[in-house]
Image (cartoon, rainbow, N blue to C red; front, side, top):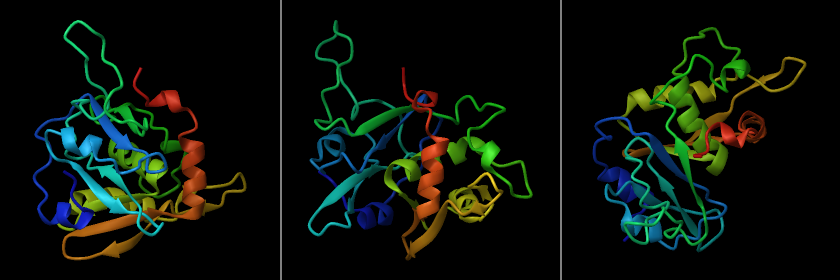
Length: 206
C-alpha cells in the first residue's frame, strides 16, 4: 500500500543507520504509480506524489532511508538464478552506486561550482542532484536542517551555466509547510543537470 507525500513526511521514521552500497531512484517520467515498488519496500521509504497532470501521480524514494536492498528493483526467481528485473513493470527504477560510501576527491559537480567555498559535501550533492536530474524535485523533512543545507547549495546562483561565465541556481524552494519542504529544479538547472549527468555509466550500477 502506498502513502501520500504529506502523510509520509508527517510520520517519517529515522534515516538508515549506516550507509549502503546502492541507492534507488524512481524516474517519474516512466512511473505509473502501480505501487509495485511500495508494496515490497521493507523500510517503507517510498511515497506517492501528485503529478502536474490532473488525476495522475508518481512515486519517489526517500534516499536518506533507502537501504539499497534492491527489492523494488529486481528479485531472484529462485535461489539458483541470477537476479532478474521482476518488480517494476515499467523499468522506472534506477539502482545507483551510493556516492556516500566511497567519496572521491573529484565530483562531477565540482567543475561547475563557482561559489566561494570549495569544501562542499560532494557525495550528498551527487545523491540529491540525481533526484533533481530525474524528477526535477526533491522533498525533505522540515526539521532536517542538515539536508536543507545540502539543497541550499543548489539554490545559490553560483553554478557555471555557459562558456561565457554565466552562473545560475540549479534549484529553488517552492513549497514549505510544517512537515515537508519541496525544492524544484529551475529551467536552467535542468539543462545544466543534463550536462552534468551526461555520462550515465558514471553512477549506474554495473
